[in-house]
Amino acid sequence: MCYLIAACTENPFSDEPEIISKNSIRGTVQLENSEQPNGVYIWLEGINTGTLSDGNGEYLLTLPSRSDQPGGGITGSFNLYYYIANYEIQTTKLIIRNGEFLYASGDIDEKGNIQETKKLLQLASVHTEINPEIIPTSFDSTLRIATTVEVLVDKLEFRESGPDSQFIMFFLIEKLENDDSRFPLSLMPVEASPKAQVFENGLHQSHSEIKISPNFFSEGDYILIPFLWISQDALSPELVKSLGADFQKFNNQYNRIPFKRSGGQITVIAQKDSIGRRGF
Image (cartoon, rainbow, N blue to C red; front, side, top):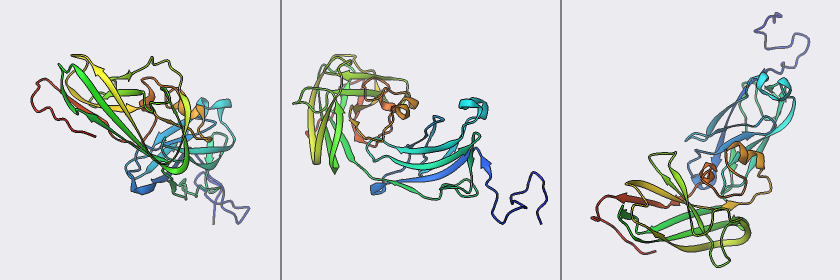
């Protein structure tokens, strides 16, 4: 028997379970090739809220309070986006009523779990090598940088900056122990506009040389992040804006775009001892 009290979860006037409204959902995302599924950006359109998946690919997304939503509580059908730059965007359709998710409707079960685990297809892999990879603070020479992009689908459009003969022109340098220490490293003015280039399935490599002056780096570990914006029709400028980055532009917020890449690390030391060089 069900009594008409606040804890009731069944409708006494129908055999159908009552649709319960809540403000949080849980789900799981996977990446192709068994890549660690952390850092996938889960973003809900319409209400412009997002979260990141953990090391198991699990996420919890909570809506802001109704007073912080458009109109004091939105109603409608909205896309939940799963985004990491070098993987294909996926979406889930969700229903919100008066500022709360509708449980037991669509892809959400009665406990607020999204039933389908989303698996994202990898579009490209990116690896960067630096020579030398250990330098002193007094380094007064040239860094040689090789960036290899493997396109894993038939064709892929990138937005990058530089003349036709140079695939990668801009890099973002980030000091690993300090998230607030990052700056562009470029061979061209950073205001240069990115242009689109289409690359077919296979390996594509670029080589860059950048002159470094003494004391350009302080001691520490850094990572050089190549500027590569992968174009996808489903990528919303509002999604990118919610990450605090500029849509298809290069600046020191570019590293806020979630991206699975490897390599690119450089260590800066005080002494010239133990400086290692290796070819590409």
